[in-house]
Image 1: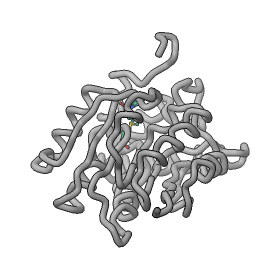
Image 2: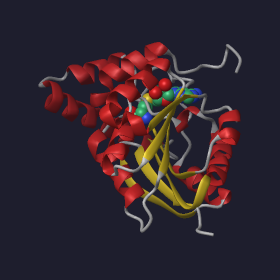
Image 3: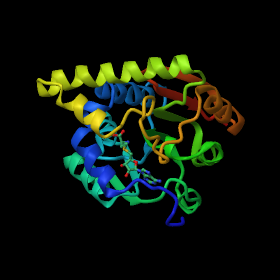
Image 4: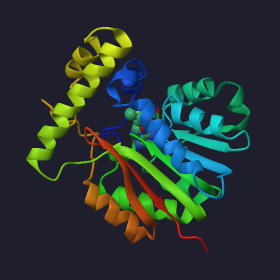
Length: 246
Ligand SMILES: C[S@@+](CC[C@H](N)C(=O)[O-])C[C@H]1O[C@@H](n2cnc3c(N)ncnc32)[C@H](O)[C@@H]1O
């Protein structure tokens, strides 16, 4: 990586740790849908990767779902990896926390096979070819029958969708702020930090979401089957895709 490529930094980590509870639409619902998807098949995953685990809420939900499942949580941020281990609590004995850079290739070649891979709110930091390459590499890493569940932003294909997503995200943040903090301070922070990708005063070069159709095409091109949309609110989607059983 060269220094002039914008990267997530510890200021972003601090902002997300402070405001993520309000900024992420229906966060608990998203975590439940992703986790349900992993454990609804006939075979329970024994080994799951959480790419860009953040403070580890998804990792913890997966660890709590099955006393035998092991999770490898990857993240670039030392602060986030520390937070993931803390969030895991007693289940941290089944957690491996690994520093990595999502866009780099070495971890993909050294990774042991995984029965499932999840990632939330991070893959949009890769450009289009980077996402397509990641999907191909995850297909290779997954065991036959393994599932990939991606929770992330999508780029609208029209101005109408962009306006709709922008309004919906503001509404979701306001509702969460009122519910969790009893006031609109979360919405004020959301606006002050210019966090709404769909209504930015200054576009953030770190954010490179791709359209829904592009991403489902890349997943199918990588070999995945049952490529599906499980959920969509305010431009945030949950996609799932299955590597065919051998
Ligand atoms: C918006 S947070 C999402 C965290 C968590 N998955 C969640 O949904 O709450 C993005 C996370 O991705 C990590 N991250 C961002 N860019 C990364 C990169 N290029 N390589 C590795 N981690 C990255 C950050 O450190 C942060 O923990």
